[in-house]
Length: 463
Ligand code: LLP
Image 1 (cartoon, rainbow, N blue to C red):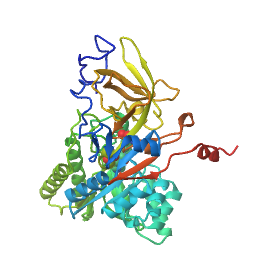
Image 2: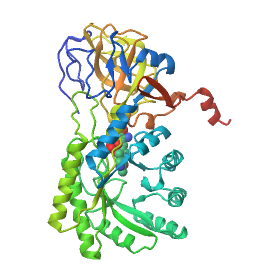
Image 3: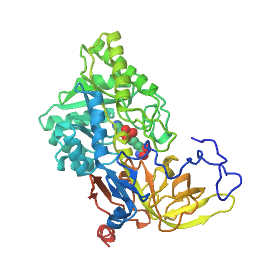
Image 4: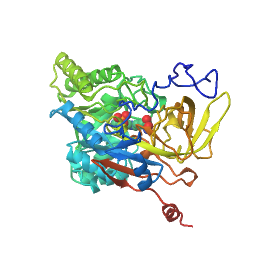
């Protein structure tokens, strides 16, 4: 992930230290539209606004740290995915990226389906009125209780992840007198170009059933033989934050080959394939994500071509984008606290949140951008590391970035593209209070997930 160091004018070092940074932007006040949500702009005073509301007002009303989610951008991205894939495909939003009842309602209104991977996500989806048949249930270790609830609710599909689960789901479905629609998750053996912890299609990991050694074919045999199951297709998810379409294409090809083998062995043409999620987004100006229509075209071309070659009916395709929909729609707003210049190194800028609201930098070495948003500044760029307030030196939010050298305590800074896997992976480390998610749209802001309070902490601590 390392990029070349750039020698442009930092304040605290003649020679820049080793790092993962690019050159400072020519104008630190400019907002790169690649990393900010669509309604973000600066007002006449230079303050950042989202949905027409300035950050100072947002900070005053909702406090910091807080996530601000651009609702019209979220809805537009849902529509872009649905339109790109069209009526012959299904888009399942991956709820693990970020889920709340408001999100479920927006998904429902915009015509998307929902992928859940726990009892908690299932409850949120059902409570907010997502029709059960539009829900897919995932997970490598669904509990019996979770499977019971999913079957009882009538979820549209359960994605089977192991031989044991094939039998488990079949028994539960039979007990409920239903045939549960299922897919089998296969590992196609693709090395996805992403961080090891978020790559999922190589064989040495916990998800799915391997294609390579005939295990997937055996899983299909077993599923087809069980009365409680209606096998509707095969599923492959190769990883997350991926830019290169080549991995998806190999995955699609291998999944179609498996469908052809199933047809040859069982005389059955499975009607669906799911190619998972994993499409990358721009966290910094160096990232170049694909648009949904390019992704849809690449995937449907390869599936159609492979099916023609194998003389198969083209299956219905589904995809499960999470990050690509919600990631770019939110930013985290922080207030600057302590500023500590380390001569010859960099300046540590401490904010009022940290690894409890964004664990991704510590966990995946993720790169983020940051901007001074309560005002503009013409000061020279200074090399900073944005760190949190937790008792851990790995508590880093933005590892290497440039902010104006006149940054001062009390300034507001924002980290864009934090809509995915930040609130959903937030923790109470050091008894931090998890920040609220505030939806902003057309000049109105409303809390969709409230800030935790100290009473919340004490309520769980039963003495
Ligand atoms: N479908 C399945 C079966 C998945 O496991 C995932 C993500 C998705 C879809 C959605 O992937 P997306 O489009 O959001 O990349 N916490 C990590 C990402 C973990 C992804 C887990 N599975 C991160 O912060 O990067």
